[in-house]
Picture (spheres, rainbow, N blue to C red):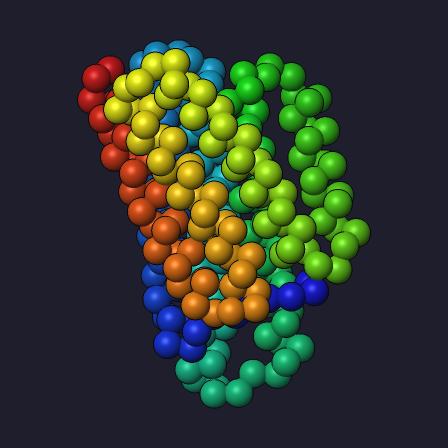
Length: 219
């Protein structure tokens, strides 16, 4: 895979809990968005929900595979390096695949594009670029940062045009996700950044969930 996150030993159990919480929150956001879609019949809301369900799958896969690794470490104390690398690489690749699918879908929503060919082209270009490079995590975070920047700019412009609380909360949430993603880039060399990234991401997802609940109550 080229490189792995550096996670503090004391935080490994907590990172699994964080991943499960992220998976649960993003799943709830996705379900809420789909419920709002049924009431409003807005295709953008539907795609927003699908995007967060993709992200939810990414976190659940990562949590499950990390749990398997942790249980093996706890019971066997020693794991063959080949086994560790195999599970880590599978987990990271599946996480990146579904997380990218979610983010690309969000970009698809924010740009209000109505073309599956454009969506598939964007996805295949990014995924193809990651497959051919040995430094997959670095490339993954570069692409996710670029996608998040476009999403943040979109919601910033949206907030400037319409200064409502819901627009402000979404802007803050995706800005935090951008900062969290940048922190993960540094976590490839320093483990403390992984902890910071998880905390920032938790705050961001909670804000997104609260905002969606507020919107749902008005429907």
